[in-house]
Image (cartoon, rainbow, N blue to C red; front, side, top):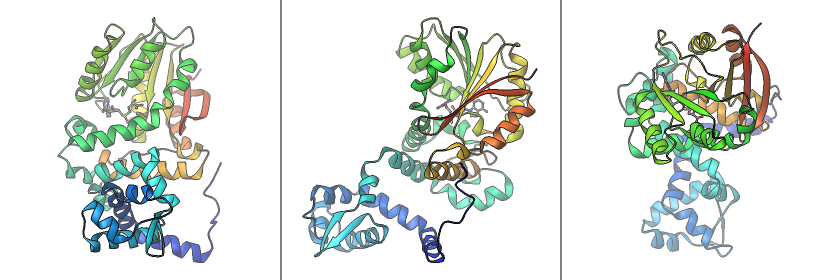
Length: 356
Ligand SMILES: C[S@@+](CC[C@H](N)C(=O)[O-])C[C@H]1O[C@@H](n2cnc3c(N)ncnc32)[C@H](O)[C@@H]1O
């Protein structure tokens, strides 16, 4: 489905959208503060009766001026409605308050990206995540992930998990047929896939590869669940070209992992997978591709997430289109033998075998 081949807006609508872009950061912060200060919730609780600015200001202990500028901005955004001096909640305000996807995206944009995004231009020019200096002097965000401030880490993990968590239960049966017992999970992060797999069947063994900081978190979670005999850990920086992958696995599993790398790096990782697997081995990849989405807004979310990779994560990766990504698979000597789109919120599952 190509959502992007035609301009669907009239000139008037396009000029309107341009103003939403011009004021984008303002709108974002107003919506966030109206929520964080409890104003939207209070208005929601007032139901169809609504509340005046003065009543709200008194309840939330802010000045009438402060509440007025926020709410007047909120009117233009469509968060709230105004009748007879009383504010009531609009539909968009409802979603800002209650929609989990919106919460995860807003927290991620605010806590992880907002300051760093100021350096997008420099990041594009240099191919480096210049915005990452907002948090520390690492080459990539992954090296610093376990040292980020608590709130930043929380928003990062919530974002990361939100997009893969709902897919995992849907695909366990697709991965674990009777032949698949030994799995190498590269970029296994906090061990979510390993835990889901170990619980799925008693004869599955998972080895997680990740950077040491993340593996410590995974090890603790797996110990706490008494699954340590079913899961092994291998700290390894996959960007080290000399780092060979261990052999003897039925499947090499990579979920939301390869999007952390440039095309050249993806090909290098996949070539090492090629060396590590025997003729029957499979690489199985779970990735959200922006050109394989059911809804245009899902494609939009992924396209915007790419800018996090540019400015904060590593400067050279993105949420890929399936076209660019599958070309990398091909160049590493694999072919896609099965493709399943629209798993969970946004994922595609690719089963790949060595090309004959
Ligand atoms: C976006 S998370 C994906 C986590 C998980 N697989 C999932 O589906 O939710 C990417 C993971 O790759 C790891 N990673 C990034 N760069 C790496 C590197 N150079 N070597 C090893 N692991 C790396 C990160 O630490 C992180 O745990």
